[in-house]
Amino acid sequence: MGAGVPCGARAWNQQADGGRRVASGLHLSRDMAKRTGWLTLLLAMAAVPLAGQLLPTADGSALFLNTGEAAARLADGKIEELARGDNRDFSIHVASVSAKGEVVVLLETRCLVCPPQGQTLTAIVRQPEREEMRPGQAVVSANGRFLLLFRDGEALRMELPDGEPVQLGAVLGTVGGIASNGTAAFWTPNNSIVVAGESTGEFPVMGGLRRVVLDEAGQAVFYDTQFDEVHRIDLASGEDAVITRGRLSGVSGDGQRLLLLRPEVKPRGVRAYTATLFAAGEETELPLFLSPIVDGVLAGDGVFAFFETASGTLLRVDMRDGSVEGWFVRNVPSRFGCGKSPGAQICIVTNGVDLLPEASVEGQAPYGTELAGWRVVLDEKPVPVISLTADPVGGTLTILAQIPWSTPPGRVRVAVAPPVPAMIAAAEADLVVREPAFLVYGDFFLVRAVHEDGRTAIGPDSPARVGEVVHVFMSGLGAVAGTIGDGEVAPGNPPLAVTTTPQCSYTVRTTGGPLPVLFAGLSPGRVGLYEVSFRVPEIVVTEPYVDLSLKCDGAGGQLRVGR
Image 1 (cartoon, rainbow, N blue to C red):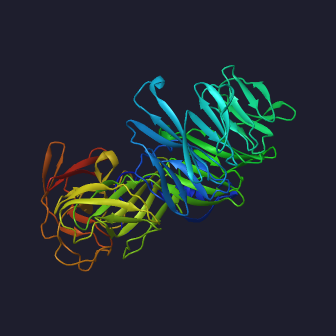
Image 2: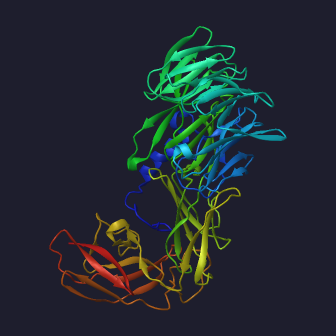
Image 3: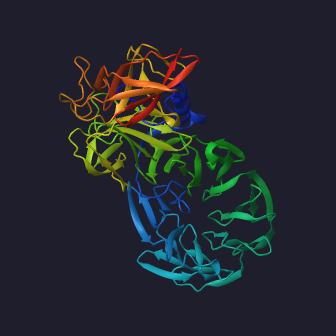
């Protein structure tokens, strides 16, 4: 076994071949994905799709997004907050941006708990050196010259900076777009798309619309329906044709490239998609990541696409060579588990698995305070990091680290730091001098243990035997008779014994008794783990196996013993 025995469940399922299958999907899936390093920022938010749209600049150098309470701009490894709501009386989201990002439309929603008819919507239009507020919602053209306003069931066009709104017609919802020449297209109560501007026309549609987009020149309209049909309207000929199927997630400015998302069935009810690039009538499936895609968008130049995954990670993909770059992690909730005493291993479950170079990353002893760019901070002090393990289905990352031996008992703050500076959500935990606990497999309370050879794991397929000496892993057994540094593996000759030997006992069916402890101390060759050694008592095993109930200073677990 390695220097670190991972805490938590799934120890029997984390086989090497399964890890390789996941990792190969990251590195070479669809012959496109190639890691080029990563950049990540973290905000204190829930692990759900971003609160609104992902809106990149045309060249993909900046991304506007919503963080839940705030509208923000992400570029050059820094995040800039544009405006903030309180999520009680009002919220603010990014609604639309121009191709260069110099004109930004924010949507302010007042009275969040009111019925819809009681809400007040205001478009905040930020232009270079000026800002104005308009009732309703708005979409800006790629060149930042025109606005399409939605107000009181009407669509209006306005030329920036000082033009007067011109009424275009009745609109259904806020589905519509506007080209750089001022041509607008929007969904009407007649279940049709009306085009107004240099080109005009009305085009009936079948079913509800999800999105209406124009190319930058105003020569074509693209839209998708609830039936997953993607249409293109040629405004010169008036032809409306179905060109492909899926959810329309982005159109390049020249109208030559479309990004499509198609539903994919995933365990645990995860909403997920596969991503496809549609160009010149041909489709190219885009890379897979460690966790499923939940959202995506194509930048206006068609060179970059941004994806959000179920792990809360936002990734930028270069469409020319398929290289992948991490840009953002939505949250580090830092759920804290495992040991709670000095020197013990700790587990932190967080987001960001798609920033890992592979499904599992193991450090080497003596363990440093950084692994693959990730750090764990305990009261602002970096601590040794042992391993990083991905759960692709759940979209979570488990970080195994060690509490420094010199940490005093009391309340501590535990946080995860990514490869670059970030805003981090910390967790709090109460550390104690001594809190014995068995390391167990999931919900079965079967203790983690090895056979007498000290290497072979005891489990369902390899139970302990009557009369053999077993070594059971524990945490929280307190001080040892000797010294050891943080991140160092425990010595084996001689081993470091604890200063307070635990009192252990067993029960099986209606019998039981004390278990004489042969050794209790740090597990040789491992970091932050204790082991307690004893001989399996002479019990009668009539079935293929029995589960021996163990107690050691209040800690409880089950040891599987076979015939």
